[in-house]
Length: 435
Image 1 (spheres, rainbow, N blue to C red):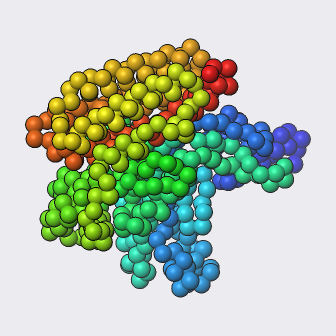
Image 2 (cartoon, rainbow, N blue to C red; image 1 turned 60 degrees about the vertical axis):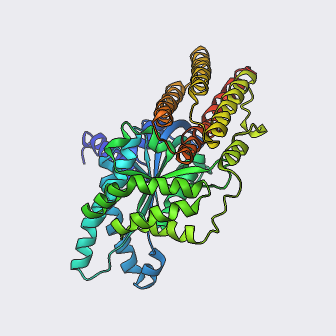
Image 3 (cartoon, rainbow, N blue to C red; image 1 turned 180 degrees about the vertical axis):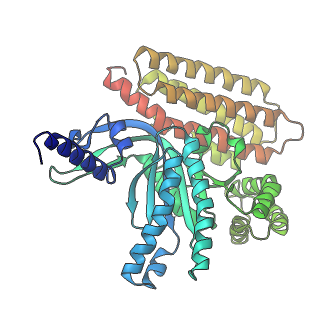
C-alpha cells in the first residue's frame, strides 16, 4: 500500500466503524444528544424532551420458544424483528432497544408517528403471518402500547460499559399499556396523553376502553383502543357500536352495571367477535349492581385538594384549587340531575383562561424550555372543555353519561396535568428562585 492510500484506507475503516456502531446506537439518538459521533458520547450525556414511546411484545412467546430449538428461536426472532424494524423507521421512529422478542421505539416528532407505526406494524404482521402459514408455522400475535410525555434520554452505566436509554414515568406507562392489551385481547392501545397529542384524532378508528390505576399514580389513566388495523368487518362493527359501547362503559364506571349490561348485550349481537365487549359483560355480571356511593360524591372526593397537588408555587397552587373546586361544583350539580349550569360553565372558562394566561406569561418571562408543549396541552383542555360544554347544553343529555365525561375529560386531564406538566414547571420555577 502506498503512503497516499493510507489516509483513504483509514477513513474508510473509520466510516465502516461508525456504520457498525450505528447498528447498536442509532444516529438519530446521537443527534438528539447533540453528539456528532459515537466517539463523542460521554457517560451521563442527557437531554429532556417530549416523546412518544411504543412498546410491543409477542403474545405467548415463552410457550412458543419452548416448543422449538434455540437456533430456530433466534432465526424466528431475527426474522420477526427484521420485518418490524423498517416499519418503525419509515414512521420516523428510533428503535431504542430490543428486549428479547419485544421492541421499544421512540418518536421525537409528532405523536401521530407513534400511532401510525403501531397500526403499520399490525398490518405488516398480517403479511408476515401469511408467510408463516405458507411455511406451516403457527401465526403470532403482538400487543402494542403507546404513550406520550416528557422523558430523559441519555447514557447510563460505567466507564467501561454504558448504554443509551430513556427514563421517565412516560416510559413506564407505555410499557404498562402494552401489558394491558392482554386483558382485552386487543393489539393496540394508547394513553389519553397520546390521544390528546394527535393532530386530528378523528382520522383514526379510536374508542374509549378503560380507566386503570397505575402503580405510583394517584389518578386513574384513561386507555383507548386504536382499531384501524382490524379486519374490514370487525372495524365496521366497532364503528357501528362505538357510541353504545362507550355509553355502556360510562354506566359501568359510574357504578351502574345494571344499566351497562343491556347495552353491552346489544353491542355483542352486532359485533360477536368483539372481545372487549365480552370482558365488560363478565365484569358487569360479577358485580352486585351497587353504586358504592353516589358518582358525584366519588368525583368530589377525587378532585378535592390534597398536598400531592402542590407544585410549590403559591399563586399557581391557588389557581389550581379554584379550578378544581369549580369543576367539583359542576359535577355535584350535574349529579343532582340539574343541567342548567351555564353560569357555572362560564366561571370555569373564566378561571381557566386566567390561570392558563398567567402560566403562559410566566413561561415566557422565565424562558421555560417546554413552553410550546405546555401551551399545546392548555389548548387541548380548551378544546375538550368546549366539547364538554356543547354536550352539557345539548337537549336531552343523560346526566350520568355527562358525569362520566366530566370525570374523563375535565377531572382526569386536570389532575394528570398538575401531577406531571405543572409539577415540572413548578420545579423549574423553584430552581429559578420563584416560590
